[in-house]
Amino acid sequence: MNQVIDDTKKPTNEQQDRLLSNLVKIVNKSSLEMSIILFTPSGVMCGQMISAKRYFEETGALLDDGFKRSFPDFEADKDLSQVLSAAHDNPLFKDGYIHLLSYKLIDAKGNISNFDNCLWRGKLSEIAGFTLGNF
Image (cartoon, rainbow, N blue to C red; front, top):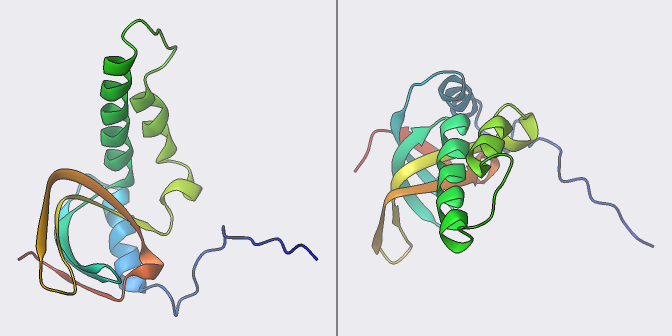
């Protein structure tokens, strides 16, 4: 028997920190950005929390640049940055996610990886804890 899995459901309150979720909503509705440290299964992350809108605009710009370099003769009706920047209004793309820019990751062995000017997107339900600030 085939089972259909619906992975579009939002995490329950036990799986998602309400305070962190509300901070993400505030950042998504404004131009506010803040330094944050996240405790995730991959390790401890520290970066600049940005809005979903900025995340999609920056991601689109990176994809546009790469696409234009790879296919310089291709003409598109819209840039990928325009298409992706509109995605931030769609709850399926932003609800339940947090977005970081220029982050650091400390893994279980204590190794620090710097990702300057890199974008990161993660599920709020996967974050065990957080603190405001940076290291």
